[in-house]
Image (tube, rainbow, N blue to C red; front, side, top):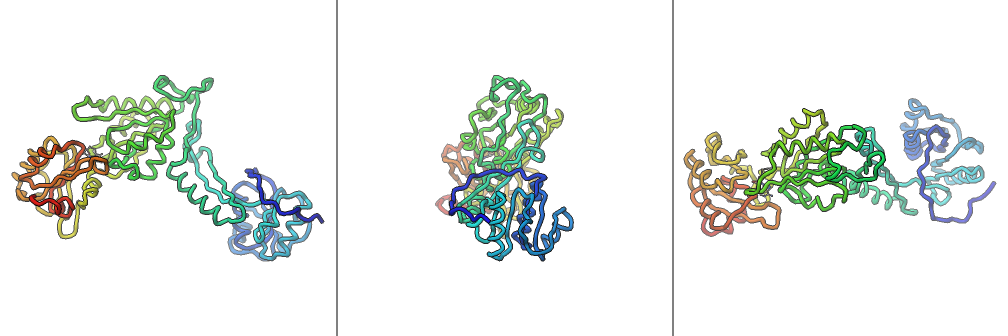
Length: 440
Ligand code: SAH
């Protein structure tokens, strides 16, 4: 019997293809069950050697084709094995398995005293990503990150958990780099419109990016952004995330600024469709939520008409979050029982006039005087508090307060500019800006 060579902690990381190959697990407890499950998932043929097994292992032997040798370990049980695991809870038996494995030149993981073994099981984070050929995530490639941390498995698990979170959110670069046959070109404006993947249709995700802060996009949205080939972006939304995109991601800016000529919606739709039909993964990154005055429904229809798979990812709408940034809850026990979101004075007449109903106005800066007048004409008190919140979560964030009678003048004097959200109702009194204002 050969004994182990002197302990040597350096490891040589490998991914083992155990499919169809025999792996022997010695021991019948929960650790043995976990290892057996992992080996089975990787396609191994598993043999368990143990006089008794725990419930989990019993399940595997009953239904998953694990062979169970129902007795204590005997030298010779590793015959034919490519890999051994021992987790008997008995140091002497584990040592014997390890020594037999060493003699047979079979790599062996020992659960009790890792020092005895010749292989360590890393902590693993896995995720599925869409394939480079356009296949979706369910059938795409797997990215796995295996973490070894010497003899400190808890440290390895902590690092693994941190990696897993970043894989889930897309903070790690998961994007498949797809290259046209016979070309090493990355996608760029020049090749836009040429199919690069042999006719596979790409996809479009309408992603609500939130009010602008890079931390207020959803995990799903962040992840899709990290996998995108093309990002079609607006003036509003988390533009800071664009800086993190890889150099070869095409960014199309269709941002509309008041006064500047907006890109017509039909043209935006055409850009989405064209890139997706060319096989690219397109993210339409929108401010707030795609369906709150975001024309997301039209973009969805345009893609569907061309048979393009579309996913809609909701976002944090500015209608709720920008007031919150100014300390204003749109509903509040005793002050507001509901809220309505509008874009201007045209629809004011259809809104409950009660003082406990909050009105939120988007895109309303230029029409503020008319809207305030219309609300008073519909029965709201002229003293109803109003706040105009500019550039919520941005560097220019500022709150101007007044009443329905005074807000238009105050906003003009303050030089209020878009983007801004206007809030009308008693809840405005909860804003620090209201308390700090001597003469509202
Ligand atoms: N879909 C978006 C709204 C698009 S309409 C959403 O759900 O938020 C554009 C309007 O949103 C702007 O005119 C402004 O009224 C408001 N808006 C969006 N982001 C804003 C921000 N960070 N600060 C203030 N207003 C904002």
